[in-house]
Image 1 (cartoon, one colour):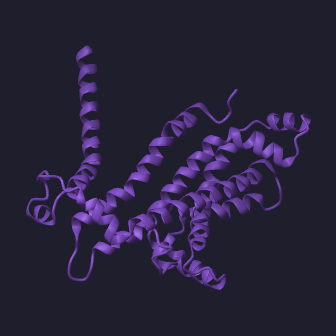
Image 2 (image 1 turned 30 degrees about the horizontal axis):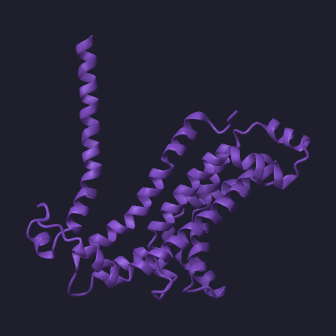
Image 3 (image 1 turned 90 degrees about the vertical axis):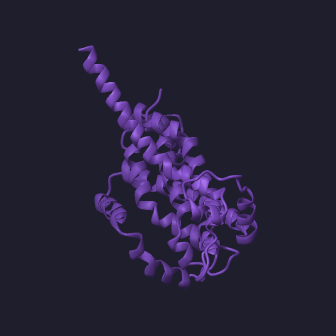
Length: 276
């Protein structure tokens, strides 16, 4: 019996180790490649850099103006995340706590947007942005990113709000809270886990988005970091090592954001949304 348990543990650890290597190897190779020269990279892609070329990161910032593009991405991603979380939480609250005619139809229609490919919405969004006079502005990307991820955010947050006991709202009303106080002081804190989960997905989506950034912008002053990576590839030459350095720089905020909130997300999913 003990032998069988030991074999099961060894097998599970071996499988997990394989998944870990499969997951981390591309990331480690990318970092290693970003520290090579182009000659080293093309000569032997899997050889360790000797010596490490940290100048690739300096060159990436200088040649592609990554500092400006990085600041644009930070502003656009955080603004879209905050706006999406606010609008989605309000919509989820109304759809979860209030029963009205066509409410289920509205919710079903809204979450259908999860199934719609992002590329299918390119023409409608481009037309709306041009009609509003927002083409080639940061606000265009903020509003677009907010709207594109709204169905998923509402779906996630509504699931948490559905589990909140109605007695909490009744107690808040007895304490003299109005509608807005009840929402912001009672519902939002209890639904924090769902809101953080939706906001994390929203930030990752906004930060890594490329298609709409290319479609709705034309000047470097408003473009995002993902657009800057294209700078290193031209028709005849490609600066692979500087491009890989720029990719590493673009990955860091995504990894940091998920690492920062993963414990809260996991604990919230296991503990539930109602806390004493």
